[in-house]
Image (cartoon, rainbow, N blue to C red; front, side):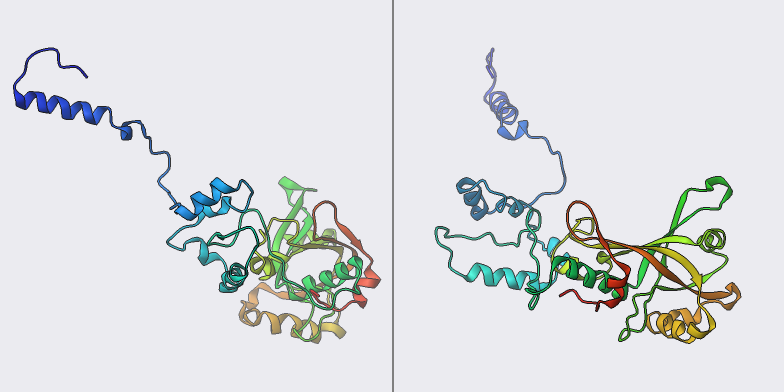
Length: 287
């Protein structure tokens, strides 16, 4: 800025102040986001000394602990223990567990003698037994979407908590569109996600990550015969007590799936096919 004519001292001072504001470095900044994170000197040093992926999640560390609320305390306790161990060639550690680029799997004992296929079978039984709900898909009979796959989430149980059968039982009403579909075509598929439990959360695995397993069962949906009615009641009501209080005018009844095919996805890529005979022989276990 150049003052081209003589002015009073007050005017000259005002002109200088105005120029200082206009030429200030802050004038060139534009706020693009209202959310910000604090970057400590420790993080800056880490970024300067290393370009690997471990340094990047530190930029997302929120000093108000917003992110920490989504993860159990055990995760941070474990991370503190890891940081307390001496590591050669590295004097500083990032103060937060990595949540963006790495996943920590729980160690499993006693699985050295189990083959991957045997583990997949046990996982399939585990998902069937410990999931309280699943997604049941049918072929729609509704006029506007006739023949189109149609699904809904239903409560499910394969038996009381101490008695797993591997057979999914349901408590349904004919007023449900899915049940109407089943009366004309009893073939259905049932998907049971591991995300329904706490395993994926404890191991910091996103529900959509293929390592967060999902099981798909296909077969015929049939009404529970009289000789199995008492067990069906125990299976459903022991796991879902609220069902006993559902309005009786909806004419609830029990159904089960006669499983014909089993698929499990618990890793990247395709799914594993599990033989029905082997499935029923297995014991529900994540180990």
